[in-house]
Structure formats: structure tokens, C-alpha cells
Length: 417
Image 1 (cartoon, rainbow, N blue to C red):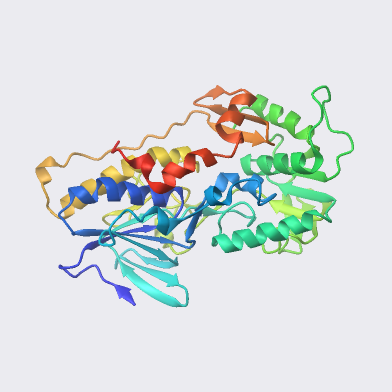
Image 2 (cartoon, rainbow, N blue to C red):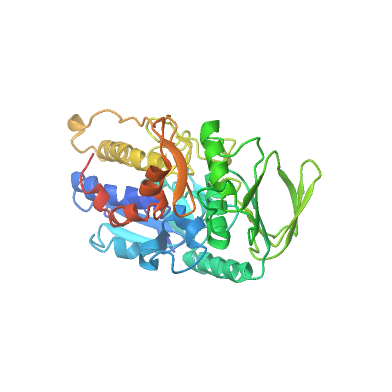
């Protein structure tokens, strides 16, 4: 099966790959504010996602503990349902996975179930995001795969006595904090540490501190909160090998033996790797990628360098800014303004009214919020350190779940900004 883009009578395809924060937001914004400015029925938005559901991924460290912690109808939402208000003449959703991008021929091969289809595009937005080392901490495949791994993990907790988490960035610290409080409770206000925790939890940091993107004093506060829920922090500990190799990645419940770079060994009933993310760009030609496998874009316009006309990238798979949801949300209006401009110029529609490029300027000030359990947290916003109560209020209550309803439905993008 093939969808062509070279038939003059057919609408031109604006193809979006990825069904999370970047992809869904871009689709809504283009449908609301770009297509109405183009000639009627001249363009069509097609959104492709491996999963038919979107998830509030930051909530994974807490959501994986129990299915009753969050309302499942808010944690997972149907992507097609979020686009029901748009005409089928303007929008199509396809559940599938991009396998090859030919940016010269301007086609994408997509595995749709048992069928491999080819889709030609007039404009392409790469918003495929990134995968986590542990399948517990992100939507690496579809929602069924994530739910299955969560269920397996929950069953394994009942017989486990030791958990090792590798990686002391936000994902690792949040996971350690949630597990510590859930399994061990929290030490009283007057106690500096939890005595005799039920579950032995070790958090490994490859550096001499934790949360390296935040100032050391904030990391020290995070350490104090973690100790109060029974988490032991092991610093300068980089994992060199894992036996079996499937532990923590393909099998979330098997026992593991970890060998550290200095020769030390650790045993774990459950091993959770939380050492960053891998961009979902295996289908993209190496000539379009940077050394870290993110797509090489102009950081101002978000156009893909060397990709050809009307190819863009946004989100965790793109190089324009460090991976973070607030960078995605600030970039969406800029990206869509440039897509709109390029599409108008391509169809020679009112060229005199087309302005210059809009440029993305991401905020480089210290900004990161890290909940530690259900009532504590550390972080900074726009360069200012935040007290624990504010981290809880903004993120720690439900890991941004209060923000996603309007974003998934498109209400957040009701106005062109």
C-alpha cells in the first residue's frame, strides 16, 4: 500500500511521526491554525504513532507502583478520540512504526501491523521522542507493553528484598523516592534517616553527586530526602556489565548481578536502569543525525539540516534543546509558524503576506523539578531554587497529570501564539 503526494488533485500530506507531547501538540496546532490559512482541501495532516494511546510519561515512577494511584482514564488517553472534532478530510491517524525515512524521495516506510506501507509527504515533522532503558519508565512500545511490564514488576516486588537503580538524574531519583516511600515509609521529622528499612534500595550515581543538572546544594537536599525513605546512595558507581544482560531491560523482574567500573559487584532482586534516554531515530539516515543520535536541526527554525525542504524535528529526538517538556511546549508555536510559512510559499499563496522565519529561543536557565515521594521534592525554575512545597504543588502531586487534559485534547492550543 502506498499513499502518494504527487497527484495534483490529492491533498498534500503533512506527515507527523510521534504521538506524544510534541507530535500531538503539533498536529492540533497545525489543524487549528495552519490548514485554515491554506487553500481549501489542499493539505491533509497524517499522524503516526506506535501506540494508539498517549501517556503522561513523567508519572511513570509513581504509576508503576499500583494501578490505583492515578485514574487510568487520565494517565492513558486514546489518541484518535482526541482528534474526533476534526474532519476526516483534514486528519488521519495511523497506528504504526516508521522503519525507514527516505528524505531524498520524500517517503516514509511504516510498519502497520503485518503490513508495510509507504507514505509520501509534502512536509514532515519528526517527533518520535526517545526510549528509556527500563520499559517501566516510558512508552517504549505501545500501552499494552507498558502495562504488562508494570504488572510483572508489581508481582516481583512482593518477594524482593533488594532493588538497585542505576542513574541519579531525575528519573532515577524520582523512582528511588517513590519506591522508598511506598515500600519503607518515611522517617519522622525529627529523624535524619530511616532505621531498618523493609526494602534495601540502592541508587547508583556515576558522579560524585546526584542530579548533576542542578546546583550541588539542591542535590544535597535531594540526598537528605532520599535517606529518609530508606534509599542508600552509592556515588562514583558506573555499571560496567549486567548478568544476565536482559535484566532490567527485557526482563524487569529477574535477579541481577552488577559489575561496576571499579570492579565492585552488587546483587539485586530487581534492577532498574535509569541512565538517560535513547532517541527514537533508528529509521533516520545517519547524515541527518548528530553524534548523540538526535536529529540535527537549525536550533532557531527547527528545520532539519540537510534534510531538504519542509522537514522538521521537535522534542526529545531533536537537537534544538535539552530533552524537557517545557522546551517542547515553547517550541510548538515557533515550529508551526515556520511550517505555515513554508507551506504558503510552496503553494504560492499570498506570498506578499508571508513574513520571515520565527526563531526558537529556549530558556537556558536552571529549570528542573524532582519530586521525592508524595510530599517532598527539590528543584529550580528559571534560575530560582524552589522550596519543597512548591515542587510538590506544581509537579509532585500527580506528576503533571493536571496539565495533560487540555494538551491532549488540543484546548491548550486554541489560540495562535
